[in-house]
Image 1 (cartoon, rainbow, N blue to C red):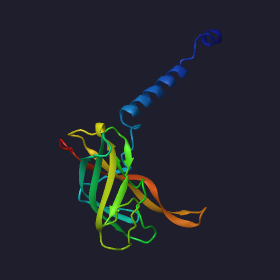
Image 2 (cartoon, rainbow, N blue to C red):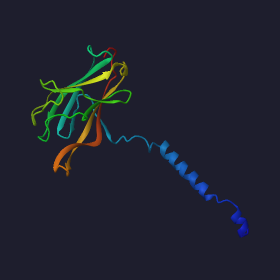
Image 3 (cartoon, helix red, strand yellow):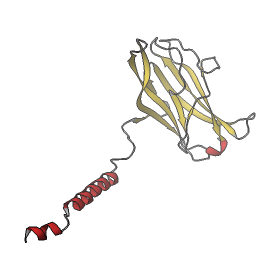
Image 4 (cartoon, rainbow, N blue to C red):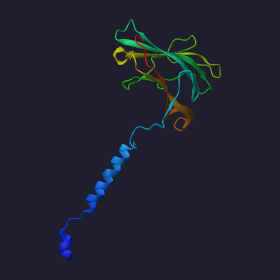
Length: 188
């Protein structure tokens, strides 16, 4: 072959390279390389003690109740026990514990109660024995049906230094503890 004949033929290596890259990406995707991270979620069971940051929780029961004063809405009430392990905080902030519905929506609790107190942001005394703990969520009635499984989600917290305010505070680590509850029975 002469140099002119070789120059007239299209080069095939860029096309081959593109095909190899596309096949590699497809193989990775089929192998699950681009799926959601599962190492960020830890599973727990009802009745199991969960420690996250300064808190210790144990969720014992989940009950779905019809709301009389807001038609089309159910209350999901989670009961268990809670304990504060140190003195850096005194209440459970919204966003730390959530409820994942079957449709994927995550709800923050409407109110929480430690012991006899009945308002959101109940103060907790550090280093006391575990106290009765109750969380209430408002859920649209049409999102729940018999046989569904709900997920109680607790953010894993780590103590980090906030240089701007020069103090340490508990922040989500990006990891989550999930407690599956279900299947739900007919009528709640």
